[in-house]
Amino acid sequence: MALKANGAVGTVYSGVDLIETVEGLAVLEVNGTPSGRGVYLAWGIDAGEMIAGHLVDRLDESG
Image (tube, rainbow, N blue to C red):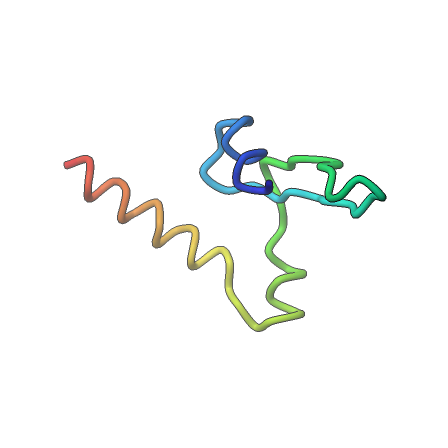
């Protein structure tokens, strides 16, 4: 669901806020400029570094 929401907005990277309802998950918000701070604090993952690497790889592929 998060990947589909990201694709609908057309971003390479976004923050997707989901909520659990009695009918299942629902998208609350798709943020095109999310902060990776929460991910880093919770998991020790540098999302900015990963995103930059992904974008460089895409540029390399496009020649």
